[in-house]
Length: 199
Picture 1 (spheres, helix red, strand yellow):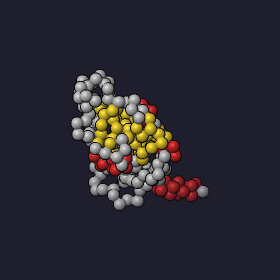
Picture 2 (spheres, rainbow, N blue to C red):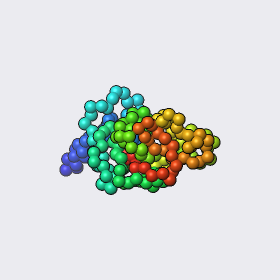
Picture 3 (cartoon, rainbow, N blue to C red):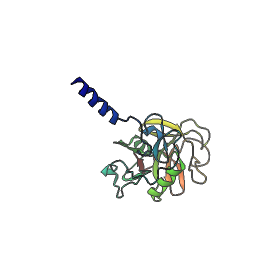
Picture 4 (cartoon, helix red, strand yellow):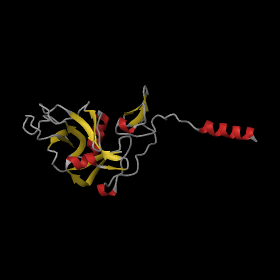
């Protein structure tokens, strides 16, 4: 009997595989990937992974909340949605979190391009804010969502002449960022825009 129990345990144990399967989980930020994995091209991938995940049968997490007023279902690998029914100031937008959905972090060029397509020319908040006390319009920009400060800006997709803090002189007037059809612009954090969200 003990021998049968050991065999059953060995068989069940052989089915368990704690390793991560490449190209199976979509992401918008490395912070959303399991430990030791990075968000690359919209997928959580192990270090040194090569090739493309394109062509994989993937799906986005369950649709964003109904109050967002979204008509279209997001498509992988970059799952973005515009909350047309939730226009707000930047602080409210950054605090948005329902299930896995939150204000979008666009930390690589592919994500920025895909997000711009989804927004369709509408100016939308993204999870980018400028730290207080800066002396130049382009200084101190960081990704921030769910009320947490995140990674430094890295690759940027600023529209021509942006950021400019409104008049080209840094005085803290425009410390939040919105994405437009031309690229990112700095804007007053009290302005109202729909939210660009991602899982």
